[in-house]
Length: 168
Image (cartoon, rainbow, N blue to C red; front, side):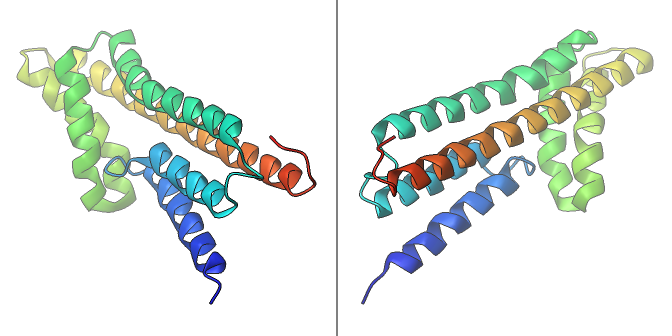
C-alpha cells in the first residue's frame, strides 16, 4: 500500500493548523507551518525540496518567532506601556480564545489595560498601553501570516522546480 497520499494529507493538515496558529495565540503557528513543510520535503526524500530550502524556511520561521515577541513589545513600549501591560496583553490574548473572535480581538487590549492598572498607572496611561499592545499584536500577527505564506510559496516553488529536475 502506498502511504504517500496519507503523508501529504498529514503535511497539509499540519500547515493548516500552523496557519490557524498564527492567529490563535495558543498554537505555535509558524513552527507548525515549518513542520508541515518539513514533512512534505521528507515525503519526497528531500530531493525536490532540499536542505538548502529547508534552511531558508527554518530561518523564516525563526524570524517570525522573533517578530512575534518584538512587535508586541514594541507596540506596547511605543505608547509607554510597562512590561506588565505586555504580559497582560499576552494573557488576555490567550484568555480571549475562549470568547471567540471578539475575545481574540479584545483580550489583548483588556489584558494590557489590566496589567498596566495593576502597576498603579492611571486609566489614560493604561488605555494607551492597551492600544499599543493591541496594535503590536495585530502587526505581529500580520507579519507572521506574511512569513508563513512566504514559506509556503518558497516550498511550492521549490517543489515545482525539483520535479523538473532542478534542485533547490
